[in-house]
Length: 317
Ligand code: GLV
Image 1 (cartoon, rainbow, N blue to C red):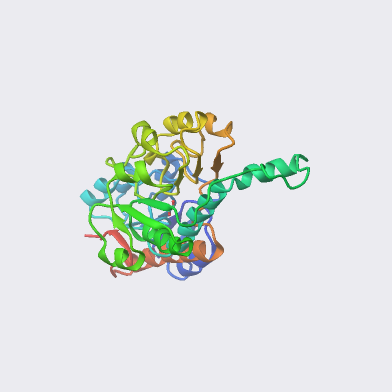
Image 2: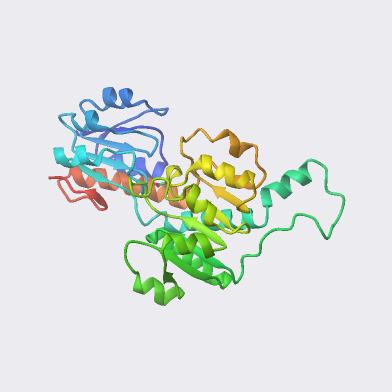
């Protein structure tokens, strides 16, 4: 029987797919790179997470045929090494689109209307009754939304913006005519988005080109009333520059689900009221996590059975 390493516990839906098809070892806790290497020796497949760094040494394992990550992002995997060795790599696109877009919206509203700050205020016993000056935030309805990276998730955030009658601008490598028709969205440069949008939401994958796409210069162009939300990857935003901008109130607020040195959070962010911080939970609905686990497992089973993977990042050779 083929052997599969599951690098940390996953939802039952994934295990139900794997158990009939392979001998499965599930690590009860996250593994270091060296531990993955040691445990995957003798395995044909690895089902991993975005918290695992899978480098060339793992792709060198002689029996390995597929690495299936339970994530849409693949920046934690050495794809060049996988390609060179003909090892299949798969991810879980599509099934987390709505969940991630919903969380981006949760962050947009939470930052615009200062929800966590208001709740901290109340829990601290400081609510003395309705006050005309209390906790004023930014309106969102009818404002301008800027989407950096209009893939599946960015476009879904744009579709949801129709409910708030927002004008939608997007930055992408090419025009998306269908998205434009659906949402009245307009292709724009990062510069126009920074200068004119009331809400900027980041949905690019992490690549050498997108690292620090939102840097000090981008933040300096933003309106002091504007909000920045990041649910993609931490390093797309220069966290130190963001701390400066938030501290000096050069932007109104930020909502972050991802961090540059995850799970570490820039200490400056933790001191600020005008930032909402979440522990990378964009895909964390029961429905979506079950589907992600099942999809990763279905990819493993397909490759081990000699079939093409259902959602290849790289097909096997
Ligand atoms: C989450 O960040 C993912 O890439 O699935």
